[in-house]
Image (tube, rainbow, N blue to C red; front, top):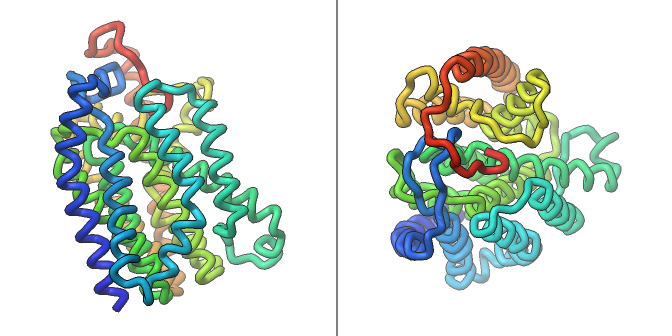
Length: 361
C-alpha cells in the first residue's frame, strides 16, 4: 500500500499548492511583498515572494489528510511530524519574517542552528556508516546540526533563479522517495513525494518566466525537510555507501555552496557577503537562457541523484563516478566563475543603481 499512500500524498500536495499559489500571489501583490530587481537578480520588476506558504500548507496538509485517511497504517507519519513540528515551525516562521522584514544573515543562522539542534536531539541523526563516529552521540548531534544548517542554507542559496530551487529539490526528494521505498520505509516515501508534489505544483507558476517566488519561507522549509529526509535515510541503513549516496542526491545545492565559499575565500571576500557568481549566474553570463540554465542544472542534479540512489542500493561504481563528475563540475564552474568575475569587472551592472540587495543569494 506504500505506493498508493505516496501517490495520494503527491497528488494532494500538488493540487493544494497549484490552487493556493495564485491566491497567495494576489495577496502578496496587494501587500506589496516581493523581490525587487538588483544587480544579482535576473528579473527587472518586483515579483511577489510568498509562494513558500503554499508549499508548506500543501505538503504538510497532504500528509495530514493521509494520516486521517490511513491512520492505522500510516500512524508513524504523524509520529515523525510531531517530533519535528516545533523546529520546522521555527524555520517557517524565520522564513516568513525574513520575507517581510529582511533579517541579517547572522540572525537567520542563529535560528537555523537552534532548530537543527532540536531536530538532532529529538533523534533524527546523520550517520556516516563508521561505527567509531556513529556511536558517539554528542558528536552525531553536532554533525547532524551542522549538516541541517548547511543543507537549509544551501537550498536557500540556489533559490536565485526561476524554477531552480523547486526543480532541484523535487529531483532530490524523488530520489529520497525511491531510496526509502527500497529500504522499506513507507513513512519517508510519503513525506518525500509530498515534497515532490509541492515542488511541481509551485513550478506551474515559477518556471521561467516566474510569476511568483517561494521566498525564504519556501527555500528554508524545503531545505530543512530535505535534511530531515536525508538523515532519516542514513538511519535506515547506516553505511558509508548510504552516506555518499545522500551527498550525491544533494549534489547541486552542496556544490553551489562549496563553490561560494571557495571563490569568496579566493577573492578575499567575506564568506557571508552576497555576490552574483552562483552557478546560475555564471551560466546566464555565458549566454545561456533561463530555460537552458535550468536544463543544464536539472540534468546534472538528475544524473547525480540517480547515482546516489544506486549507491544507497549498495553499488560502488556510482560513488566513484559521482565523485569524478562532481570534481569535473567543481573545476569547470570555478573556472567559469573566475572568467565571469573578469567580465563583470569590465562591464558594469546592467541594472539600475539604488537597488536593494539580498543578504545571501
